[in-house]
Length: 287
Image 1 (cartoon, one colour):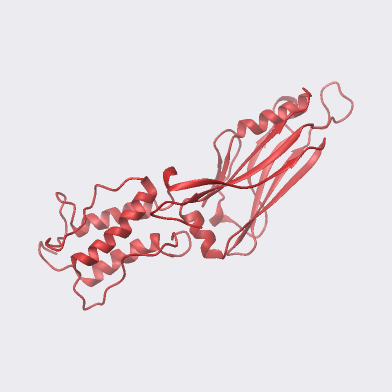
Image 2 (cartoon, helix red, strand yellow; image 1 turned 180 degrees about the vertical axis):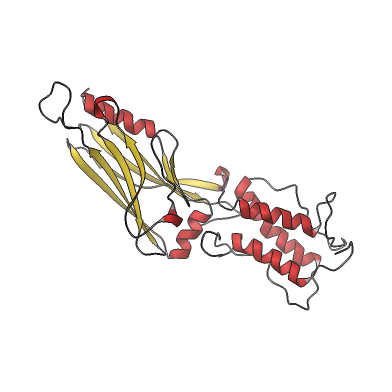
């Protein structure tokens, strides 16, 4: 289209649909589940600056959610402006809107930290001396499948941490305390599980879940205690899950301490902590 031409309804609708797929309900691994300012126009309708302003609002909200700042790559089109094909100077061309939409799509899983809140979810504590295996089972329940995928598509994470407050200085307990501290925080997101510290994650997130447990994280003990593991497994309740179940396994497989004929106990208070990183900004908020 040339400068001053009318943007076709088909071109506008294609652009609006792309933005709506990310910001609105979308499907699969796209969609934040938010209300939209813009909407489709009739085939015979003339696209005006007002239509473009509504599209600007949706696109701007998505970019701010992802980056925490407004983009300099587009500008709002005023009623007195000609709607141009492209204008790299005033940033009001349709091509500039299309290019920024491509960025929005490519970065759709990002959520800048200031656009979200880390919230306490649940924790379990165990203060009885133990060895062998302890399991902490956690169910994360959403309203429905769309709610679940909106949460993760908007950059949400389920996060895990654990610690031991030792009683005394028994070597196995100290190794467990060190092991758990070194893994720091483990995040389960839309496509992978990764720790901020050490440990082995997996390319498994919400969209890779099955109805059977899959291991998503493993942290191993050190030295004489390499048989000990902190393991997280995850599964969905159905193929399109609205409940995600995590099995957190504290596996004390070490049979004996050097020079000790029996398998000693892990002592102290063991705490398993689950939090969530949730989009809560004014631009995108997923309950």
